[in-house]
Amino acid sequence: QVQLVESGGGFMQPGGSLRLSCAASGSIFSFYAMGWYRRAPGKMRELVATISRGGTTTYADSVKGRFITSRDNAKSAVYLQMNSLKPEDTAVYYCNARITTGERDYDYWGQGTQVTVSS
Image 1 (tube, rainbow, N blue to C red):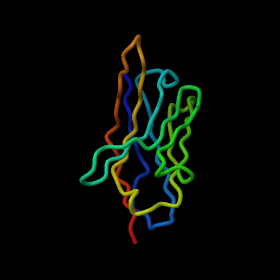
Image 2 (cartoon, one colour; image 1 turned 45 degrees about the vertical axis):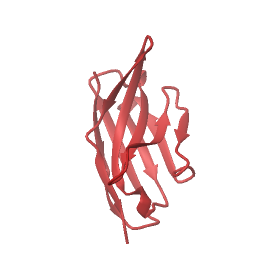
Image 3 (tube, helix red, strand yellow; image 1 turned 180 degrees about the vertical axis):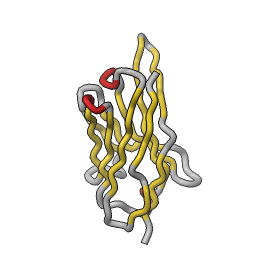
Image 4 (cartoon, rainbow, N blue to C red; image 1 turned 60 degrees about the vertical axis):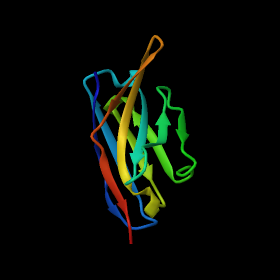
């Protein structure tokens, strides 16, 4: 079972950048597809970005062109580089690890890190 710890959140003015990190432990990191989700106040959790075991990435339309996710299997870490931040990016950001065994997906979550974008 993998454990996930996010870091790198904080306060940033619109147009600025932040880099989130997610450190994994307790299992073989390269076995997991990774993702970033966020939950803004009063809203449902939404998918922000994913990166497959092989490094293929996908992004929500709202962050496409501004956010970049990457992974370093040697360091058991995944990153989310957030550029051109907007107030609507304010949310708690969660790291997700997913492993598929047979026909079932198993999801693991970090505790979340707060990102606040405001002038």
